[in-house]
Image (cartoon, rainbow, N blue to C red; front, side, top):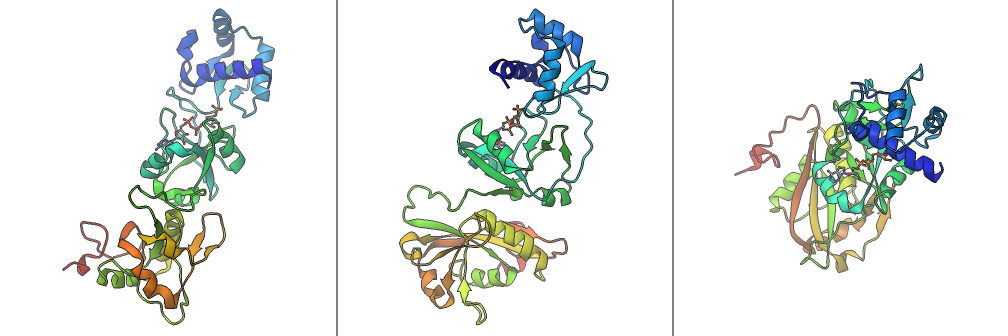
Length: 326
Ligand code: HQG
């Protein structure tokens, strides 16, 4: 698109998504504006455009932002509105994974409250990484988040696909967000020299940890030669949610967080298994006792996932089984 087209397209976005009143027009309940009325109003506001140019812009918009009605008399934005409109999109099953492009400075807030729609009607997601990269890039160095949209859908969240291929959803709760960039967690100040690790855990292992006063990992069984905590929470969440809470007899999975002295930890290899965020620290079973001595502070439960048939009563604190409390 030429510079002039970009400027016209931005202006149309403003009018058809956000502020039709700036040029004195209104949208119907489904977001349509009358083309003639629009062109006249634009001309009155120093934005003269021919019908041919408008049609060309609709056709050639890089993201197919706008649509003309079949008879060509009306025009609307395909998505991205902040004004109240009903695009009458039917909910449909999304792909297993969708992407969202954002920037580093929003991450803390996103990981605390999930992806929120803000002023728009929906959170915007894409099926491909490239689009998410472009979306994030508008604000700085892009950070790509993966959304476990298949899981969300199975948990009752409705997804819509706009006419220009953008996936829309009301909200993405944090447990469905995977940050592909994260490999280690930032040290809070005052805790220099420590590395935060995570580990998914089932009920039996948690029982032994609880008995240690939440201080140590239990020794491995003979058939388990390696103890492997993981380098980021999302990966641990994935395992606790998709394996422990589904396949273990108790149908419950926990994620534990703990700090280890970095200098000590450095002697163990970090293994990449699968995707970028699937990083594990491989500690030989015979060194686990020593490893435990280099843990600083307690092992903390940070996530709990329950499968559909889980009957474990977690009591009021929703962390450990009520029956363990003395
Ligand atoms: C972030 C453009 C803090 C979110 C693009 C994003 C897209 C949070 C920003 C379309 C948050 C919202 C939409 C939370 C989300 N705390 N920040 N809890 N939840 N955010 O522009 O997805 O060119 O409303 O990550 O290409 O960036 O206009 O959404 O950075 O398709 O056609 O808050 O707009 O399309 O920003 O972009 P936006 P978006 P057009």
